Structure formats: C-alpha cells, structure tokens
Length: 110
Image (tube, rainbow, N blue to C red; front, side, top):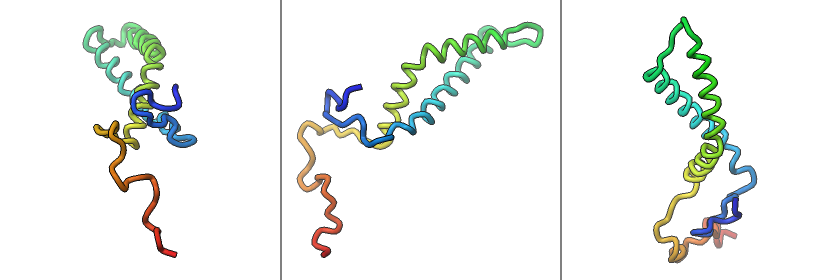
C-alpha cells in the first residue's frame, strides 16, 4: 500500500500498530460470508443427514473464503480506518483557520 492516499494525502499508516484491530473486522466479515453461504446452500441445495452435503458445503465455504481473502482484507482495513478517520468533503480547501494539530488546551498555562 502507498504511504499516503493518492487522492487526499491522508497518511495510510496512522500510527504504529494501527491496523491490528482489522483482525476483528476481518473475522466479522468472514463470519458474515460463512453465514450467507450457509443460508444460500441450505435454500438452493439443502442439507440432509443421509448424504455428505455438509462436507461439500464446508469445502465450498473454505474455497470461497480463500478466494475472497484479499477483498476481505482490503474491506477490513477500509472499515477500520473509517472508524477513526472521518471523510471531509472540503479537504481540498485545507483545514479551517485555527484547527491545526496544535493542542491549545494548555496554551499560556505556565
């Protein structure tokens, strides 16, 4: 991945270890894919105790997850970053006056 967003210049690596939380998002997305494929398999093919359809679904689900893993990884990074970095429609005009990253809370305290 690039160091900065090619559109707006936002640093992609916000801080060291920032993307460790994407594992939780990726896990949730993977569970959603598994549940969706289970429901689709159940509706279109069905499960029975007299055949091996559950094992066929497990194999299909494993291949589906392996195929979708690059996409799920990118989605999880995007979702995780969206939790902490808000989109600004007026980003091209720069930050408003007086909203720099300088902490003015303790300015003149000492």
